[in-house]
Length: 201
Image 1 (cartoon, rainbow, N blue to C red):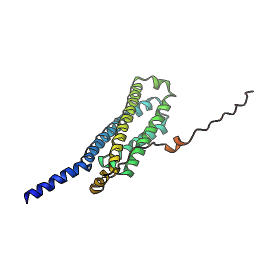
Image 2 (cartoon, rainbow, N blue to C red):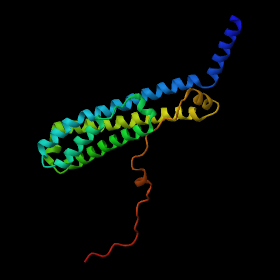
Image 3 (cartoon, rainbow, N blue to C red):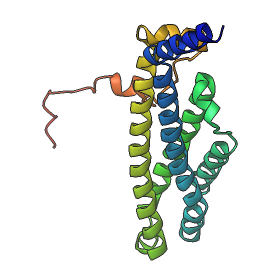
Image 4 (cartoon, rainbow, N blue to C red):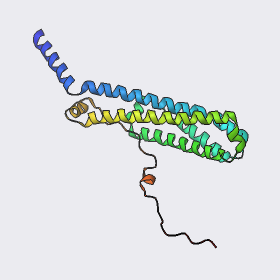
C-alpha cells in the first residue's frame, strides 16, 4: 500500500513540475513584488502633494481651482484600497489607474500654473519639491515598466499550453495591466496643414 502511494506522489510531483505550477508561483510572486514597488512610488508622489500645494498657495493663493483639483485627486487616490488582490480585479485596477492618472494630470496643471509666478519658481523649497516630484515620476515609470513586464510573463504562462490546463485547474486568471490613459487621443493623427499662411499686411 505504501509503495503505490509513494509512486503516485512522485508522479504527481513530476507532473506538477512539468505543467507550469511552479512557474505560476514564481510569476505571481514577481508580480506582487513589482506591484508593491509601483504602490511605493505612487505613495511617495502622494506624500509630496500637501507640501507642494501649501508652497504654491503661499505664492499663488488665487489659483484655488487648480489647488482644489490637486487636493481632490489626492483624496481620491487615498480612498482606494490598493491591496495585492486589486491586481486580480480588472474593474478595481482600472479605477485605481484612473485615479492615479487624475492626480498626475492635476499635478501637471499645478506645475504649469507655477510658470506664471517668478517668485514661486525661484523659491528654494518649491524647486526642491519640483525636483523630488520629477524624480518620483521617473521612478513611477520604471516601476510600472517592471510591473508590465512581470504581468506580461505571467499572462503568457496562463494562456500557453500546457500551462493553461494548470491555470484552469487552479483558477489562475490573466491579470490586468497598465494601459495608455489617452489611448484614443494619441491614436488620432495630428492635423497637418501645408497650405501657405496668409501674408501679413
